[in-house]
Amino acid sequence: MSQLFSPLAIKSVTFKNRITVSPMCQYSSQDGFANDWHLVHLGSRAVGGAGLIIQEATAVSPEGRITPHDLGIWKDEHLPELKRITAFLEAHGAVPGIQLAHAGRKASHHAPWHGGHALTQEEGAWQTVGPSAIAFSEDTPAPTALDQDGIRKVIEDFRTAAIRALDAGYKVVEIHAAHGYLLHEFYSPLSNHRTDQYGGSFENRIRLLIEIVAAVQEVWPKELPLFVRISATDWTEGGWTSEDSVQLARMLQEKNVDLIDCSTGGNVLAPIPAKPGYQVEFAEKIKKETGMRTGAVGLILSSEQAEEIIASGQADLVLLGREELREPYFPMKAAKELGADLEWPVQYQRAKR
Image (tube, rainbow, N blue to C red; front, top):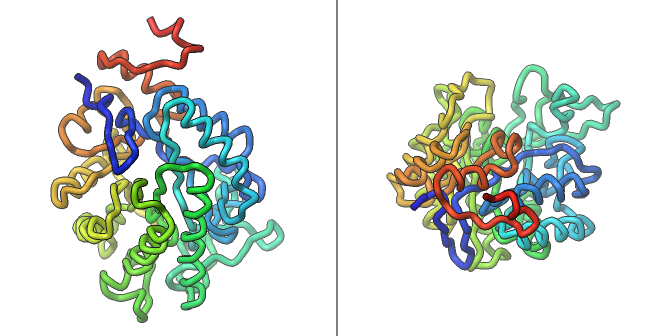
């Protein structure tokens, strides 16, 4: 029996298989609003058979957007379109998830296909924020270091975003603490040079993430899953390490976080040895050393590769990004290749044989 197509129960939610559509920015919104692109993009992956679909990094505040075209959940007016999406995903057997995000110093940029560079004032740039006034690169402006009021606002923004996520029908919330965005900026010593209670020691640098987890848990039902995505290494000497990630995972486990989504990098410019499955080792390390559930991500390209990750106990979920962009019906194809029975939509069943 295929382990990739075995169900996974976390709290009150059961995922029909271990295939997750990884959150992938579409940069296709205006003022944070979802539209038909998002409905079709995410909906087609539900029709394709994924067990869990995590919506792209969704900004908890306007200043937390990577680009002016990011999805948002900072106001109630965003909810009607999001409800259309979650209803469609559930109707087709996928669990709807959402990634709540703040871009920190990597905010206020153009979309990748417009060069990805920082916006100018003439182009509508806004002031970015971070733990310290340290720019991401020579080509980007330095952020303003968050003061205590700013930190309190960020925490409240995540809290109210979680309330809206529940109202919109999401069944999984993932806190985005990876890829060099705000929460990663705080826990990495490369970008956090603070001398107050949010900087210096390991415990101080992870404090904001822990406080956001607590704030979300105040409003997110105990019976619904809560994930955290981290960058398990900075790939740079003197930066965040896999051992730090294990220590953080233990603390998040104590705080009743249900799964660590294990990505890497993004906080500084560094060479990353990208190859098929290059990040799986971090999910395996955290899972084996803490007993916590993990998600593996990073160039997972085939049904055999995904099956091996689950069957060997390296992770509990596989998160597919680029492969799901290339093949929205990857789960259907994988089920056939692995001899598993995946239910197809009735409209497509004539093609199942």
